[in-house]
Each structure stands twice: as structure tokens, then as C-alpha cells.
Image (cartoon, rainbow, N blue to C red; front, side):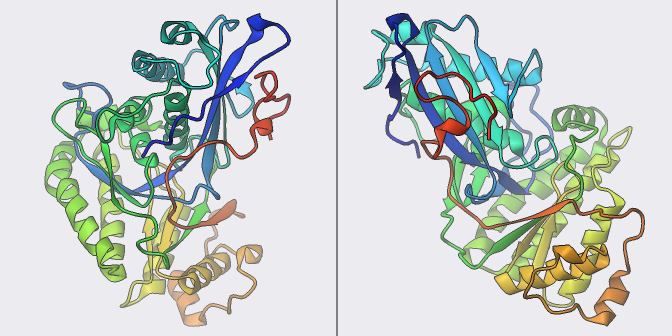
Length: 412
């Protein structure tokens, strides 16, 4: 779903300083059925298996992006979380997304200060973006960022999709999982056979399972030692399990996930979610040299969730390419109680919800205390399943001066 063109026009004191501005906010998404490995023969950041995710509420975790296009800019530039980005893999992927979106600009959008589509395509752009959650820590920050970028560029250039999911094929070039953040609810990224059919599709709206709650237990907010792209390359080259998992395990689970989610069958959902997470990390360990994204603290969360569930799952964990646990909970009460358990296990009582009861002593004995290091949990985010990308950014002044298009002195 692409919003109608809402790109706005800004004029400085002199005509030479005219500019166009568009903005977007996009949520992160958490893959339940995970993709790991790129299809090198096709290219275009296409995957070797389909995947399926849940989009999180953009009111809680999001990327905010403003794009300013102006004839006075000498080069395309990216300012991320207040810092100008230099030459990097992000810069290369950014240029690829920009080139694709500029190529789709066929007419001057309403309100533009450019005189022609050709002129607008020539203008360089300034991209100012911020995340409201840790970057490069396995919480899909790049997915939110590139989804917000492509959504904003679609408005800037007045682009309407020529086929369903077209914008997701561009977001995919920036970050594979970004294609899923354009949509809300349960979203599949179909691996496809070519470039234009490797795209995202919303399977179920974010309102389908309103009772579902999410807790993100951040155990390490720093950038991971092995970036996802580098990890995928190593796995494709060295893991015998990877191809089997892609075809025989991950691919069938996309349809299975849709079935259990449609029925709101939490026990079946929880089992699939946790088995799939374990399968993904088994692939990482099968890589040579092995990649270990999970830590002792991550494994303690797994043990706590299984003990908490007993014979009837109420909570499911999943771990992306990082140590941080995403817990899907069947209800607000389940989320409250499992976070209270973790607060006791990690000896961090300040994390426990105010209305939570003391965990069962027998449950605490079964899990055991975490003693490897103190204050292992750095924060807990509370959220739920939510809608996809939207415009505009609620408060542009956090990122740029709306009157001039210049970056804010201190992004907030």
C-alpha cells in the first residue's frame, strides 16, 4: 500500500535554494520464518528461501526518514542518527535504491518546485534518518530504515506502483527484510524466480490477532560482531545444512505459519516460532568457522521460556542475527508474568512490571539464576503487531528545519 503523493515544497529566500521534501516512518519487523543466504546467480539481494514476519508497532520501534531534494546539493548524502555516513556498504545500497527510484520518476509530482521530471531526477538528495531503537544489534534496524527511505522517495518522485509489491522490490535491494516493513501484520517475502517477483505480500492485517503482545529483551545493544550480510556469505559457502534448511524446512513453514496464525492457534504458533529460530541458529553454527549470535544470556532466556510454558505455551521466543530475544506472548498477562520471571532470573528487579506477582519459587529453581555477568538485560521494549510504513514523519523538526531543509542541529 503506497500513500498518495504528499511531497511538499519548500522555498528559501533565493530561488536557487528551492527544494522538495518528503518524509516517512517505517516500523521494524521480526522474522518468524527466517531467510538466510542470498541467491548469487539472480543477484538483486534476492533470497534462497521465502520468509515470513510480523511487523511491530511503529509507535514503539521505527525509523523516521526525511528526504530533501535540491538543485543546490552537490552530492547525495546520508545522515543517520546525527552522523554523516561515509563510503560503506550502506552507501552503496543507498545509491542502488536511489537509482531505481529516480528511474521510476516519470512526471513531476503535484507541489514540486522542479519544472520537469528530468530536472527532479537530476537533483541530489539529502537523507536524514533516525532509529528509535539500537542500530545493527539484530533488531532489523536496516529493514525499518530502507522501508522508510523507499516510501519517502515514492512520494518525492510521485511514483505509483505498476504492479502490487513493486516498491518492496526496491526496498529489498537496500535490505532484504526491508521489503516486509512496508506492510503491516503478517507479511511474506516470496523468494520468487526472477527479480520483480521476489517481493513482499501482506498475508494478514495487523488487527487479525489483537491480543498478541511482544516484549523485546535487549541483552546487547552494540553492533554485532558478524554483520548479517557477511554471515550469509559465509554460510552459503560453507554450511551443508543451509540448502536443506532453505528448501525442506523454511519454505514449507511459510504456509504453515499462515495457517496457524489465521486460526490464532498460539501453541502451534509458539512451537513453529521457536523451532524455526533454533533451526536458523543451527545453520549459523554449522557455518565454518561457526557464527554464534546467541550468548549465554540468550540461552538462559530460552530456558526460562520453556520452563514458563510447561505443557501449554503462552510465550514464544525468536532470535534474529543477534543476541536479543523477541518474545511473542498470547496475552498481556503472559507478557507481564514472563518478564517478571526474567527480572528474577537475571537479578534485575527494576525490570519487573509493577503489577506482576512474585514468580513461583519452583519455577525459579528450574531455570536457575544467571550469574555470568551483572545487568545482562539492558532494556525491555513493550510493543505489539502493527501497521506498515506511513507518511509523513509526525515531527519533521526532529530531523530537519522544515523551512530550509537543513539537518537539525541535534536530531532528537
